[in-house]
Image (cartoon, rainbow, N blue to C red; front, side, top):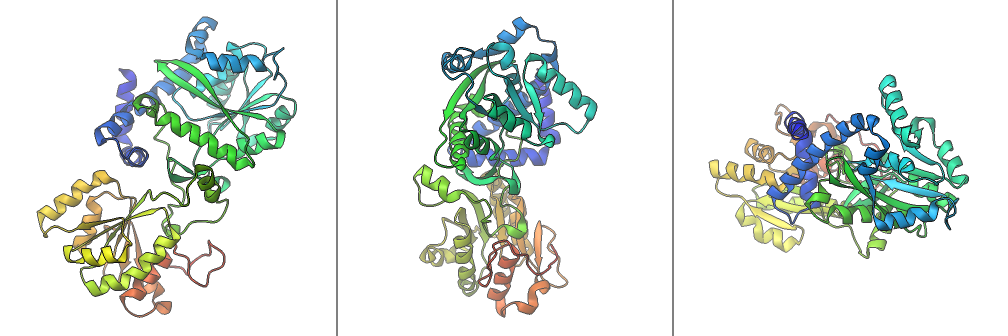
Length: 458
């Protein structure tokens, strides 16, 4: 009950993060109902509290309680036996990739649960409070694991692998510019590639470790072998594939991951939203390993079209350029019903949503569309009603143009039209083109993919 109460507090007081988490679940499990996803989210928040309490309580676990906490599957026991003293793989370097699960902390107990292994080292992110960090580190090492702080560099981890020891790394999907850009659950993430680089450098054996929660403070440890592949990024991709398969198994395994962490923030900055960075981009390799030709269209990009047919025709070239720059965008075009034939002829939209008659029914429809979790909403119609429609969907990114003397306060990142007026082509098509460049669309004369744009007020 205590964990459920703490989980409720998390959902109430972290409302923005909760909305973002439900967005992630909607993308990851589009075929499930909203009620199913809400249930997974509630259980995940409850298990977040369970994880925190486990960290405090495990400091007082006896050897008998430890054995009850961490159970080995028969397959995991067989694999571990090969790496114990006298086993056929004893002394071979091992890299363990550990995701952020409910009972990931239990992984540090493995040396106390199994004797005869080479030393086990765990790379961790230290806490900012020195006294608390010293206590947590001491308690994590109580069962035999040796903690290596990320801030101290990775030389100790490299030395351990060179001596045929075991290194475990918590791997995440929000490594920013330091990670490799791959797909996870069909959307782009920046994944840490440290485990893969270490594994390839030392020809180490690689395992995905999953402490599968069985009940309160009880986990069953499984090990999934990950092939080295031809290049380091293959390890990163295959480990994420194995994690994805686990999370998709059922509601119990889906709730076992810490969904509150924001994993899919890569390529979301407003000024770079309409482009894909080429830095450390491994999408082509991920597509090749997954047997597909292009990125899945999983980023929900909604466009409120202007009411005039002629203006929509002017907007189509800019929208096509965005489609080419962001092949992962799923285009939903919203406009008057009379525009549907034009939109269908353009073959640009994945979906067209005709507007109902103006009034409360229209506002109610957009309020109900919040459960579809759009990612980016570009308002080409320049009126308050269109801005209000976008606001009601609770889309986290709402783009549009502000003209002199007219603020659009319901947009999250407005483009100040006068800022780019000097170089803009005439007419609305020129405005929309300049706005698209402001939001990151690569300009034709660009050579570097991430060149800074002329300053404009955001």
